[in-house]
Length: 316
Length: 275
Image (tube, rainbow over the protein chains, first blue to last red):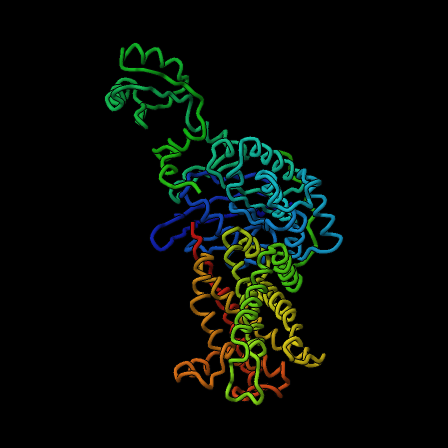
């Protein structure tokens, strides 16, 4: 297989009338990877997704899919893309099989090749016995699987998924996850997905973290967590600012206050805990020691919590 | 991670007409599965026709009609146009639904020009309107209009042009608007009056000046006249409007223009879904 990256984004910037959605974003995705774009809502994921799926022209910079520029050769790019949008794209009045037939026709598949491929995918996704039911009668999880089949029908080289697990319960999410990995093995497809769920991001081979239109970190989930350097210690206290200053003075490092709690990172964090409790008697109500998570990575890179702006945005 | 096996690439090439065909067929399936739409688009005009036609009955006397004409007969071609209007315009409303659901997006990321989408949808709406219109035309003998095969063919041709034109108008509206309610509003405010002033309900002869002026520039007037002329093979027409040839000509131009407008609006970027 050639070494051309599946996705190559260079200095990509996009401005809407009133705000900048992406600012100078660069990263690349190797063929065969499951790559995640992680970020809170409003981080720029959807804009990036639209640019990669050729629906939106970027204000500046370049994006290539298997070497083809998305603005200059959109038709060539689209042929290699399978896209699963966040909003359901299935025709609810039609059956799963009918939906796939129409989709196949849009990509030039027909006749025996199409029916064979449809059967194969429906079987692979565990939908064989539901193929002739109207989509509106299927559960949310099953519908998402039909969406997946729709995106994969024409054997794309790159599958783009926008928030694939939105609206799914934990079980359906795990199920989708398992199907995705299996499909990657069977079809050799590269997967790029956007997500605002930390546990979904954990399952990706590599991640790019987006916040307010900027790429703040890129790497494997494990590698990213390693950058934290040890454990995360979180202290509950009445006077967080005072405690923070005291810790900084005495122990150094860069403690921060987030949501009324003092938080810092330290190798072998358990050792420091006794010292802390002894040094500031009565001030500390609770101590939490944990291995770094992706959220810690996010906090370290951005200085704010992952969910902050999620609250402001009404969920649909 | 083991290197993925080379994926078996499909050799299929996207085909414009296969895609148009599949989008066309989807419109038909959709319409058929929404039974209420079938009833609404065909039933409402027929009920109008029966009630208004029977109510006015023979008290209607167009000045130019040689013999006395029952209003049921006079109102017949107008009812056909109303069926076409309801079916093709309201079928195009599905563009709004397609966009609200993600279906439209999934067509837009397929390796096809947008004209494919426009043509598939418009031909779908046109076919449905044509079918419903023809279904009603078969009732023509009941009001004393003879139907010969050749005349029927001409009628079908005229209906196709009218339906295509209206589908184009519907597509243009639906592409710009983002709510079904808004679409209904615009349709009721502009399209129904356009139909009212097409000669469908009353001939231009007795109308007041400004109404006659609107009727003169209203493309539906020519559509209505073309249909009337085709149904009567020119013979029983009221002799007020343009004869068959020019009326069909104007209608064809209307269809062409509406189609071009639909292609044009669709070639511009989508609005209302930034994010």
